[in-house]
Image 1 (tube, rainbow, N blue to C red):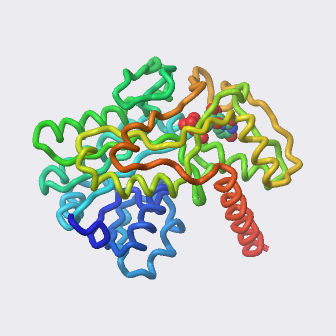
Image 2: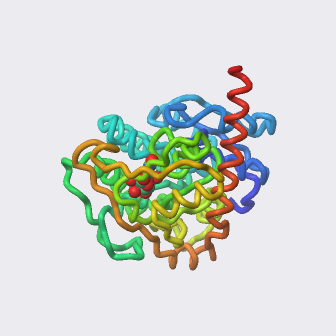
Length: 335
Ligand code: UDP
């Protein structure tokens, strides 16, 4: 793997929001990319435009298929494992599938990487930090998990188990694994269907309906551009120091959810009102939310000199333009 730009790369979950941006970047730099995606939360439309390059092969199947994974991994130089259940709504609505698919899929991918000794980058999540209030979150901090009776934490625990399994392969057989904890990532092609706040706010503002802020709106998040995230994903597997490590990727610029709603309203010039919805109503009983979530970026900055660059307003504006255009396209087609 000496030439970063000429490789065979396998991307599980490549038709998803982040996966499709990663594939786009890899293909632009000359890589040959194989996507394995069952299109459960990913969409064909996310990668349709990449077909022209002739360097994209798409296999519509689950990455939990061990035989398929052995075959696909054997023919790759580098593996990105992004396939996962995503979004708070999906996780609350389909708790069995969340736990089962996350773990089985990662197990199948790691077994194949271990057999053929292929480097693998696994995307985990800032949810793994749980309810910690030790801001900013460092990768080696203790995790503070909520009660198992609260379904949200099943996702965090399943992803933490993925991390343990990947690190176990690293410790037992020196498999080159790279684990990334992604904080809130936003950009064009993100769907609001599974709960993600920004595309939901933009859609609501464009339609003129109320912008629904859950809880008191004072909870804060840091939103990072998918382009910045992809830059880090591309560089990390080439950083020797990052092997066998967990690495945070995200923005450190905090914004409250009420402020986010106001920014979307301003940038869309929408007349939408802001409506506060209790968590119980939004997610059902027994929901835990995090008040703040900020990454410590010392590791990623020392390993690859990375820091986020794209400003939140410019990300929101790009999303507005994209959603307004695709909405207009849909209404023309359905007219
Ligand atoms: N949220 C909201 N309205 C929505 C969707 C989400 O106020 O329509 C809130 C959610 O309760 C959380 C924050 O926005 O406090 C970010 O939610 P998201 O699901 O995007 O990511 P999270 O950080 O919770 O994983």
